[in-house]
Length: 112
Image (cartoon, rainbow, N blue to C red; front, side, top):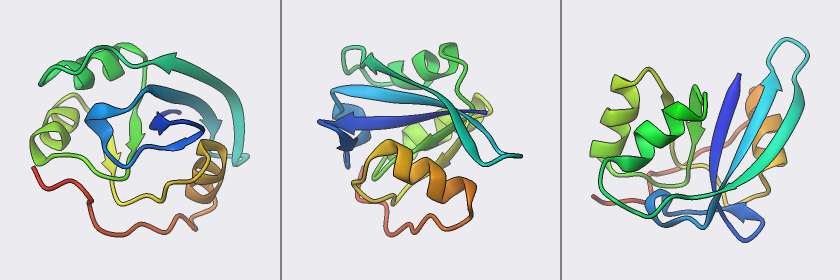
């Protein structure tokens, strides 16, 4: 599986649409291991662009701190699962928690 996490510095960005880059992590859910990590600069922020761009990267799960409802809907239409309310932590920690079923999520910090 391939997972995208929006980044600010070396941690998850709480505002999805304005992140600096994405951590694209390939993980094996059977062995609960991270297979590969790439960091890719985010494209310019334009409404509706990121879901298609993320799909083109081969991603099937996005883990974010906050994301607007329209973006969530666009991802879902493309067959990409979205988890919001994730903590501002290093992407490897977030993915390992997700794979082990211990990822703690809170409120969607985006209000649009």
